[in-house]
Length: 90
Image (cartoon, rainbow, N blue to C red; front, side, top):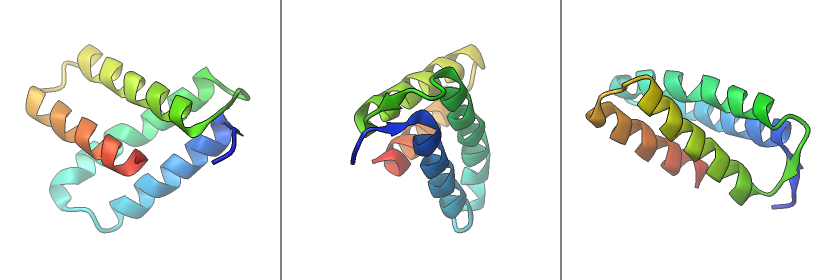
């Protein structure tokens, strides 16, 4: 994909998360609810910056990892959130 702004990547990621939310198992709703606001925070952090998909995804993954640690999310939930984020961003 071409280089796009952080806003475009974020819109795309939120759309994907919302689509997944419509049919995901109930036990994954918390994970989706955790990931969506983080997309929006990454967008604000690099607002207007043009970047390729790899850069945006890496920044998002790094931010997810940072927030999981700061929020003291359990190891089981952290692994599930990271796995879901990787699956949806690939």
